[in-house]
Image (cartoon, rainbow, N blue to C red):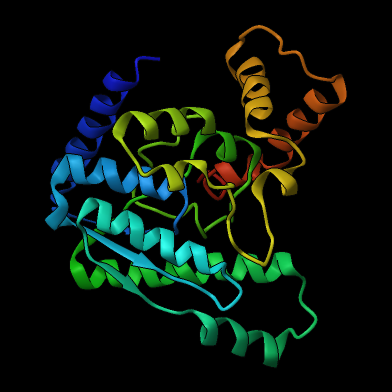
Length: 247
């Protein structure tokens, strides 16, 4: 992939989508991770820093570095960053109605609460919510349905995680953002690769083999089978809600 040309292609995609929908502002959840950082940088290139609105939405269990990295990225792009804490919106529900809920349930709730806030703020600012999903996580279903997957459009969902890192380097994101351990930061100590049980370079090589017909990677058969199962098991997440045809 020619990363410089790919940056230009994504920037044009963002510009065209905004022009076609008649929206001049884009709103993003800036988590401190590389995906949202890259999308924010591409959005600034596409429509200018005055039209990109960023929010950081921490929970008390979020790692303090996440908020610090979100601010680092906002300062790098010279865009304002507003912080809205989601503690009360999360804890009151679980205290009253689901005190024994698992970390997964709480994590999904937090992802959906965050998206509720982003959409409400987007209505306030007459903006579109821009998505931050990458192809690796999208294909294996590593996202919360109607949570972090909810958005008006996805500018980097065609990029594997390893490509996100390379484009981030090409575009000049801070090294701290590029080198940090990928995490959804939904609970203390959470790591994407640990939770999925596979590293992104291995995952990407298998996904390219399974979805694009590229040469079979040097990976164990059980690992390839696992990734295939992840794709199949999460297929419903990538579909619009089914309905019967009218007869």
